Image 1 (cartoon, rainbow, N blue to C red):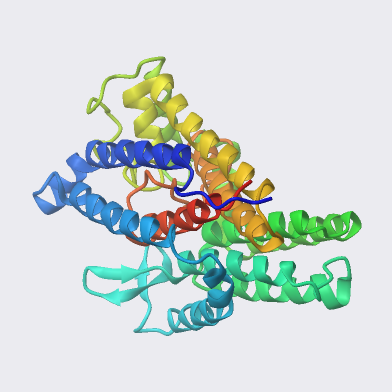
Image 2: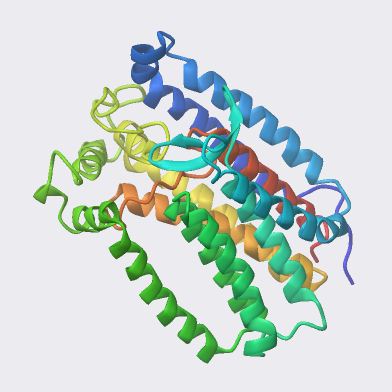
Length: 365
């Protein structure tokens, strides 16, 4: 028998709140020098991060108490809207070009990143699709291939921007859902092989991606070029030691490490707060993943379980890739660290996704 909880999972709420507090503090600490240099306001990014966090928390708590069956109803419309936005953002003069990618829509200071919305929309749609009793994922032609076609089309549109990082997170989350939904192992192994070949093709098609792979393997081969960012990241993490240099005492944030408040915020955190601070962040992410898996396992129906699985997988994959990148385990991909990195679309959408997870936790066994 499944009992409706009066409140969402309190442990997830506490973990999210602690990560947000750490994130806001570190956004200020890591961006103050750059913000003062560029905008004459050391709090420029911190104030905006605080605003994004407030909006995200409002969305999170609102979503946590809506009827969870509405997520099933909204799945297809949300997916179609996101496909439309991914097409619109590619139109020259409409999509905003930043950091080598046409990934943004907006006017002036207000902008959104459609690919971030697509991650959540794809999770919801696939959860609905795989929980349909008439859908047989073990059937290659009638089940698995149609799902892969939808997932692959979204990935292709994201790669046209290009945004390999976001596309990788979405594909990884989709594959996790396909596995949990019960796809045959031989089909999964085939997909892994085809995906590996496709990834190699994507890397070879763009010279800058080859440079990133080369820099990842040996960043000191080009210390002032492709390997510069990773080297500076390692210079930040290394001196941190057990307790760190102290909050606000980072040396690498003083215009040495590019993007210290976005993709590489974990490097500055490790430099200033040491192994203790970095370990605390990892522990909080582990708690969220643990509670998310618990919600998925104890869900009253397949749709709820797959939806919880998808959201938990997305957070785990994105955090894992980001931390792997800044520590030199993976090539640089441009993926933000959930709840900590500066960014409006990423933070608000991630908190909205957690709102769904909290909603589902109210219906766990």
